[in-house]
Length: 475
Image (cartoon, one colour):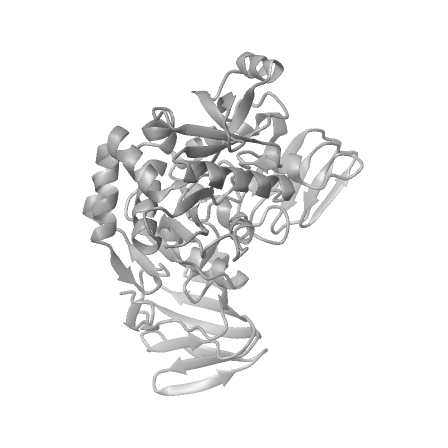
């Protein structure tokens, strides 16, 4: 049993509305947009008060498991568990599985706070006062959602009509409103008594599972079975695939919040955004005197009210107003900020074409349990990568059938195994790995190791790896 709040961080989404930086394999929650942390790390930081919170539970999918573990490690945040969804089934099954897990670990009366990992929130006094009210309301048996005071007639959010005030300071929910057309949003904002639906929830584990059993019994049954037969794998908990996949694909709002008589809302005025568009990123950024938000390598001339972000090339923008110019390592997006809600439509078009589909799926930087790599240059029978290895980590002992590799150390110290020989490679030194030779790279130092890898051969795919020994249990 615990009297602290159990944070449940939902980190499995693969949204691409902030393309080209956000992609299916590296979505926005793991990307740094504003501030010095990624959105996921900022979420973990908001629940770091050990007097108020237990260690967080994170629910994500197989593809992001090492991103979750590594970004938590960077902050020094201990997690109560990383639950891996074997299939995408929307938010209701994820919440139900997290509730079943938390009930087993902390007790059925444990209070859960459900948090999206990709929201930008200013956690000041008003935020934590809303948390206090929500906790007290949840302990009374209510399913609590947080309603944000609208600052504009936004059409990208759902709305909640606020009812009578409860003794705890929360309010009853009159009704939920789907994402409205602009005239309807304007009417609601003008009338007052409506709040944006933030997607942040608080309730007791037993209470939400009880409501699931009433209104979405197949979800509750599948979640309990998936947790009961879950398997531990390193630092991860793999929910049973067959049981979890039997759950309907349905959101928490549709499954229970819009149907239960126990819904309550905490009207709140803290700064909140789901960062669902480049326009939202611009609104939250630090604007200069001309209303521009710029990051990375950028020069703006006679340009106003625009967002310019570059991860690589130097962007020079002249004579424009109200535009987004976003450059990743391998793609550039240019569009009007007022149209940025439609980026998803553009991404679907790119995904449908064989020549551009990869731009929506894979990111030039890929993360692994030992660190990761960035693809720098691809050519005929060669490619160049930047490897980065976390202190104390090592790659699998492996070999390649179709390629040889050259490693050049540019930062830190590397321990390199080639065949039976183990050598130390320091900055500005290199080593050659012949095709078919058993080899391994490790970082024995205290700082991040960075290597430039030049691959040459007839086939350079990532599946040309025969792992002989791997501390992460990969085949």
